[in-house]
Image (tube, rainbow, N blue to C red; front, side):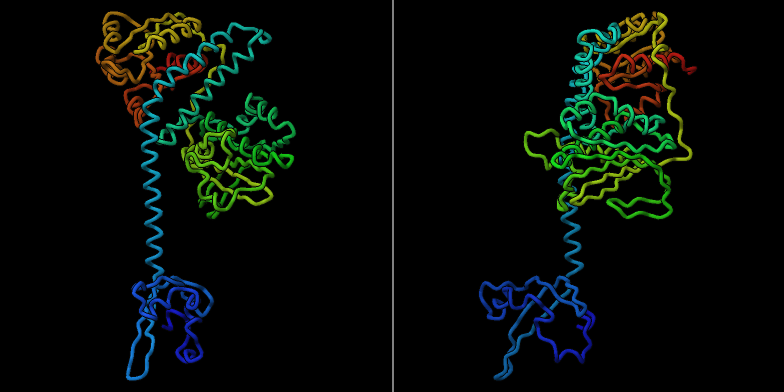
Amino acid sequence: FTQLFGYQEQELPNLMIGDLLPDWHNSPFHLQIDNHPDAPSALESAGRHKSGARFPVEVRIQQLSSGQKTVLAVGIQDISERKENEQKFFQLQEKLGLAKRMESLGLMAGSVAHDLNNILSGLISYPDLLLADMDENAPFREELELIKNSGQQAFNVVNELLRIARGAKCKKEETNINLLIKNYQSSLDYRQLHSEFYDLQVDFELDSTLPDIMCSAIHITQTLTNLVNNAAEASSSNSGKIRIRTTTQTLNETVQGFETIPPGSYVILSVTDNGPGIQTKSLSQIFEPFYSEKLPGRSGTGLGLTIIWNAIRDHDGFINLSSSNKGTRFELYFPISSDQKRGKTLLPSEYLSGNDERILVVDDEKIQLEIARNVLMQLGYQVITAESGEEALDYLRSNFVDLVILDMVMENGMNGYETYAAIQQIKPAQKALVASGYYEPGEEQKIIDLGINQYLTKPFSAYCLGRAIRQELISPY
């Protein structure tokens, strides 16, 4: 008793049962006292320690009679460990439920990603071809750019859905986050933001000494866009002000914030708004898929913060979040590695044109072959097409090509991986790159193990395709 409640034995005569069980007079204990037929065999309640701290207890009551004297025997058991284990069990159940939902989402996303990305190829590639022949001030140029960007945004949604559901990794190159922020300032997304929130004030505080990090430019830009859009909506009713800041920091000790951030050197990207803050009850849920506090009909898919969470995880980074009625600040910590490998060299646009090299495109969809033919011919290549891996092998047995572009998923016959493995049997030095609307987890590594260094995800722009081809053709391997 003294261990449980903290009192010394000599203090007991001065105690009342209500000092130990504060709910004694307000709970159904009387059912047990009166031996009521509906009385439970035990009741869960709260015990109160001498210090005032409360802890969960289980209480059993029994009347004992001895002659004419009747007393109550009250058994009290500390159930703190049991309640803690129950809480852990409930949390595991929630995680299991989320895992099952994500598995279903992954199956759905994977089944539509390849087909949908193939459809989107035309919305990105054909505007690229048209824009290449247009003057800067040509009519409808801006409209074509909007069509292209809309296709790219649709692709990003599909791609992020796959990353969230299946944990797919993104490609990273050595990049400076300041440069990504400056590119965002001149983007259509940023212009559209100011057209919707015309009185929005956005301040940029960029550290000019910021080092490069290995990151995915697309995903960091999308993360920034989502954070700024959320900040603009949150602060829209209060003469919105947003501050975008970059800095570096070396942590010598672990920081206990929204997440536990270990010691190390970091590039930090922060976005701060002056909105009403995030409700405390929502802080633990805001990064879950499809969780949203926005009213129906407002912008947003419920994936915005989930995309941010997965992007940070993919970059081995951390999130610190603080929120009050004066505003919210998101801080994204990206680790600076002393032994980072440098990314692939980016080629200027003028070096993307071909020199009449012969390229074999292998895809089971005719529209994809047509898109690839038009793009590659405009870039200055000879183009041969094959609608299956078997047809490509037949052609290569008696013909030479400088490069093979393979679709990974082909429903009839050999897939891209099997096709290239067979090509290596007849032409071990054949150069190739892979372009597909969807990659199963682990496929990228299988491709690399075969010796293919360039792989693209459809839909891709003419620039991305041209750059990948030139990088592969100039490679000595």
